[in-house]
Length: 138
Image (cartoon, rainbow, N blue to C red; front, side, top):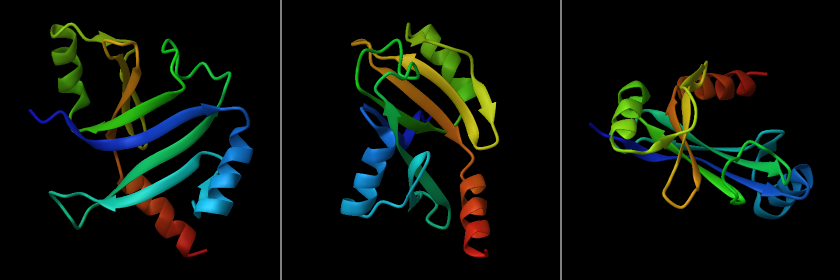
């Protein structure tokens, strides 16, 4: 079973998320929203399919990255979260929560041996593709 298929997101804490997003927009050219910036790419095994990576700034006081004490969290794209979570549990991996489902995919959080919180995401990229297509027609 294929597990991680790529990076789905990069999240980090900062003093002023909006100001920092604006800095990245103004100086590095990122297209930002209140959620950060979305990077589009093509899947290597299916180049006709668009995929996305989310880059986001979080407040220094966010609890979203807890219980990790780190200033960052990586989101990894996976193919079959429902099958992967029981395997991880069998292997002794700390699974922090139950799988949550949204219109853009399924999520669960785990800890690595050094206490880094990791977000696993089974994406539904078509939601983002549709949103981009809808935005371009306005």
